[in-house]
Amino acid sequence: NAGVMQNPRHLVRRRGQEARLRCSPMKGHSHVYWYRQLPEEGLKFMVYLQKENIIDESGMPKERFSAEFPKEGPSILRIQQVVRGDSAAYFCASSPDLNEQYFGPGTRLTVT
Amino acid sequence: AQSVSQHNHHVILSEAASLELGCNYSYGGTVNLFWYVQYPGQHLQLLLKYFSGDPLVKGIKGFEAEFIKSKFSFNLRKPSVQWSDTAEYFCAVSSSGSARQLTFGSGTQLTVLP
Image (tube, rainbow over all chains, first blue to last red; front, side):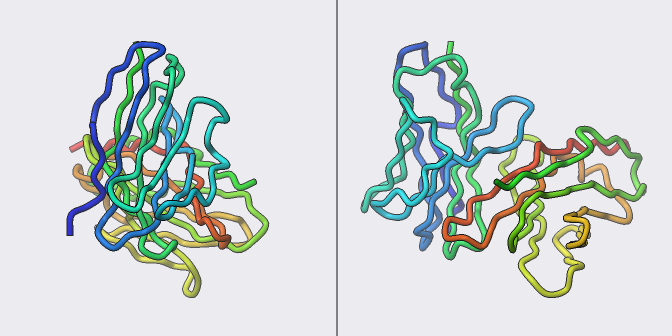
């Protein structure tokens, strides 16, 4: 069973561009979480999704950020009009049953 | 709102020394507790977890943690560290609510000298 896959692993964007981060959960996992890790900080929860539904987005910035988990395909975290402060590592985790989360390798976003 | 405090940002030990990393959380309800490890260049891996039952939890690679409810603590221990334990360690908490998102501490970087 392959682990949680994230791509790209590294992403460089200029200010004002869009960033799209992808997460493929483990097989059989229907719960997906996104976390952000800023430099020198721990991971911070952003959003929790199940297939086709956003369940909890209380950690998402109000503007420019969106997430989806379509019926087919990976979960996408989309950041529009990126700014330097968006530079961070973005981690995806999946879970089969809400009890234990399995993390992907992360996407390191650098905004220049 | 939940919060997690890890008191030590960087710990340096020699091989065979004993390890204890502190973790305290703030939350009024029932919690699930976790320790994750991130080895250099790798993704987060679960070391151990506590949901209920025996407050002394044993995890992988010789690690254990003790849940002390009265102190809101979940400290990680290992009696004898190895060079390969060099990594960053994160304590995390989730509530028993529907979303179960994790609240992480800021992490402790452990360096083990050979």
